[in-house]
Image 1: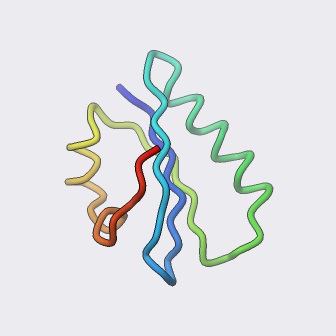
Image 2 (image 1 turned 60 degrees about the vertical axis):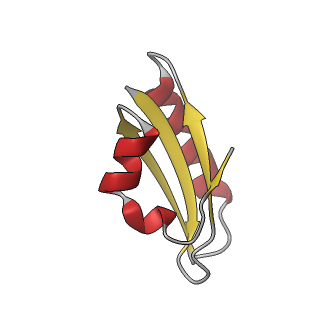
Amino acid sequence: MVGFLIEYNRRTGEGHLETFPGEDGPREAFERRLVLEEQRRDTDVEIASLTSDSIETLRSTHSRYFTRGLLVG
């Protein structure tokens, strides 16, 4: 399974995706989420850590994050 971290602006629909591959990926994504939530100043920005077998599955199960061109980085 792969860890993913999504920063999603609910107001604009813009977002950013980070991928955390490997056995520790889901834990690393979660830890990164905690850091970003501590630093977050904009309440319109949602930060989510997710675990999935692939980006394709994530696009299917969490499609709202991808409707306006989520950046992959």
